Length: 200
Image (cartoon, rainbow, N blue to C red; front, side, top):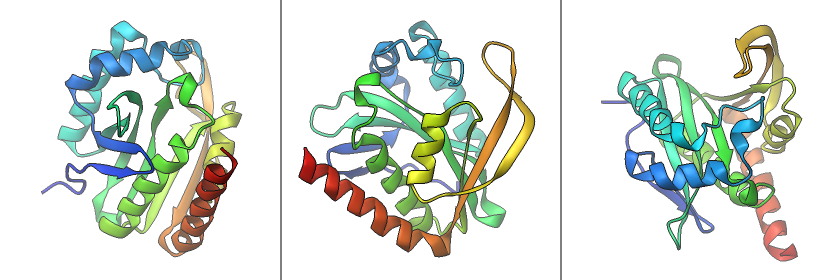
């Protein structure tokens, strides 16, 4: 039995369902919205590489270290992007949230906060995780701000940690949240989502 079992999560018009090859066309369209693969600090696939991107995610699921979701508009079924649990370590009840990207038109909306709230609630509430982590490129300042808005604490920086798509070597900024910090973080995220609704 896998630590992360297939599940569909939904709230506030956002639906997360297990990523599958049936999402290929929608995910390619999301990547094309803003030509996201041209950003050197992300791992968004070029549209023609979407199938191999999904296949790699499915292999990670089979091996037990990654579980990828497609993020969709719950009403229309339109694919908005993708996000994953990864670096899953059942023995210590820890996982990370990452491989997250959205169509440019969906950025700076409620979608990411809603998706992360669903994933964190599932991780802490259903899976019983002790720690949820995040990591990002040291130059991806927007991602760092987004992670910090979730209530995660900065653990530090791993220097010379990974290759970027352009061949340069990045430093990786690490964040985490412990289960005891989740109730306060959840309350704050719900407040932010409510404020977003009121100001729309």
